[in-house]
Image (cartoon, rainbow, N blue to C red; front, side):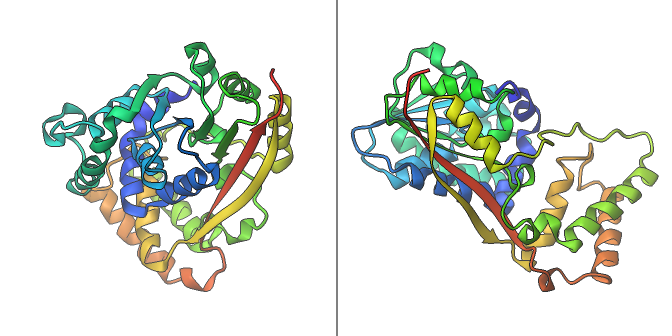
Length: 313
C-alpha cells in the first residue's frame, strides 16, 4: 500500500468525516465480526486508521491476547500509539488542529483502548511488505480496503499469504464508489440530491477561486467481483464469502455528509466565510429541485470479502 502518504496528508478530513458519520466504524465492525476470531489466535489489523479498528477487535473478542497493528502511514501509527496510551491528547502536537468534537471522539476511544495497550504491537509496513517482518498470524482484518493496494493487488495478498497458515483467513473491503455493487442505484452517492450538490458547488467554487487547484483524485478505478476472485485465487486464497453490507444515510445527515465530502476534493476550509456562502447557496438551490428522501439511493454500501488460504505461494 504505497499510498500511505495520502493518509499522512489527508488524515484530518478522514477522521472528521468518521466523527460526523460513523460510516467507517460500522463497516470495520462487520469485517471484524466476519473474521470469527478465536481466543488462541494471533490477529493482524492492516490499515489501523486512528486505532478504532484495533479497539473494535478487543470489544468483539475480549479474550484475544495479541494483535499486530500494521499501517504504512506514520501519522496513523503515531495517532494510534497515542490513543493506546495514557498521554494527554490536548498536549500532543499531532492533535492540536482537531476540532473539539474530534478530540472528544479520540478521548472517548482512548479511555477504552489504553486498557489493551499491552496486547498491541504496532508495525510500520505496507500490506505488500509485511511478509518481510517475519511475523506469523492466524487471521488478518485488512481494513485498509482493496482500492488502496498497489497494482497488481496480488502483491499485497501474496504478502499476507506468507504470514498465514493453511486455512488462515482474511477479511477486507473496498469503497462502494470503487466497486460494481449489485444495486448501485441504491447508493447515496448516486442520489440526484448528492450529485447536484457537487455539480453546483464545483461551478461556484471555480468561479470564486479560478486559480485554486483541485486536490488529486485517488482510487478512481472501478473493480468487480470477478476481478476480486481472480486476484485472491492467484494469491493462494479462495473466496469464502461476500456480502454487500449497507445502512441508510438518513435525510438529517445528508447535508453534513455533502459538506464533509468537499474536503476530499477541494483545497479549501469549509469554515471560510466565502466557502460557507457558496455552500448555503448550493443547498438552497438543490432543496428547491430535489427531495433527498424520495429517492431509493440512500445507502452506504460496503462490499466485504472473506477469503481462506488454500496453498502456499
